[in-house]
Image 1 (tube, rainbow, N blue to C red):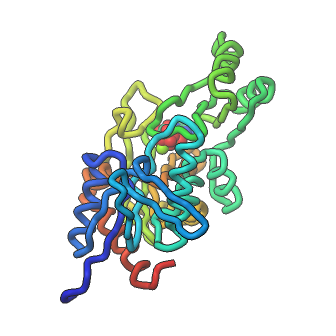
Image 2 (spheres, rainbow, N blue to C red):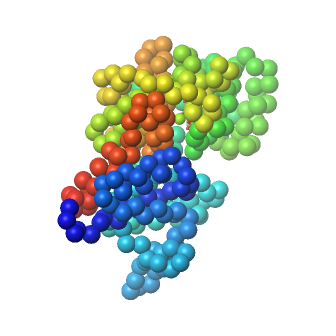
Image 3 (cartoon, protein in one colour):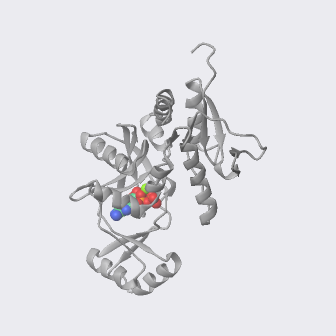
Length: 303
Ligand SMILES: Nc1ncnc2c1ncn2[C@@H]1O[C@H](COP(=O)(O)OP(=O)(O)O)[C@@H](O)[C@H]1O
Ligand SMILES: [Mg+2]
């Protein structure tokens, strides 16, 4: 190493106390690089025909060798969210950004990720996306029981079970359509009350956990009371999770799978996954591997 100047690795984050954010910072320091925590919402840009710069609230420019994205943060309207992704896109022109904004967007979008999964011949539950109540009703008649999920949802929030047998179904559908504008309806896959989260970094699956749902819950997310339990990483899990990660173009990902009656199905992929559950259940710190992969990229001359 010698007197070589430490590489500056930005970490896009919103909560500095978040387990994964802290682990990223620690892993970067452990590798002798300098972590630079950044909240994308606090960045500004200045553009003229001669110059382009991105700077902090204190008007300091950002000089980074690479950027890790822990999370992009929530915005409630189109312009702030799109500005944050566009900041990531322009960073990508000069430094490695991991995950890429395209991969993060692909993963965050439950419709488009499913389209990509289908193209990659991955096993997925039948899903209908519509703004038409007749189409929604037809899907529920066909699937009998569906989960209505927000297209950009996460942490198991806003997931509602709708069943053909429920007396207020049409009323409920109308309310949901009014509220969401478009419905994402997925056949309910009977399962053992848990899902499987596989963590992939690069070309490798590092570990897996079951997330066991509370007995009265249809979602097994840890943020909804699910419990992480170590799951043996079989060849089938590894292969499937790596294919899912590739399908959305991510360098690292948390892949959610369900053990259906006819085998594993892919539920979703997270392009800004938490490393906490797998650390608790398996003792693996995925952030170290992610930082190593990013450093390899920087070493390889960037992008
Ligand atoms: N099609 C399905 N059938 C049965 N359970 C499901 C299905 N889709 C999701 N779930 C349950 O709901 C949880 C959250 O769903 P997911 O699609 O991963 O959304 P989120 O982005 O909110 O985590 C899953 O971890 C699983 O426990
Ligand atoms: Mg999920």
